[in-house]
Image (cartoon, rainbow, N blue to C red):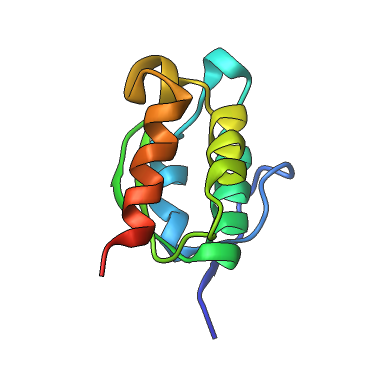
Length: 109
């Protein structure tokens, strides 16, 4: 049975140890009104769908690896951008680049 953290803040929910670092750092996207709990919920959703591994966590960013990806990554790319526009604006540069990289990941052996 996984360990759970019960936060004293009534707006926080149970979260698995995997996400503890986000809580400790208060990881957020305050420029988009995204709180730590929103990030954890989205990561849990992606973990359930694709499996994820967190590789870097800071107060304003999370670097993750997907264990699997859907055959058509366009919808996932749109979902990523909708949740965090900085993935394009401060990262990939344009949605097509992100989609191209995700497609490349689905074709790796």
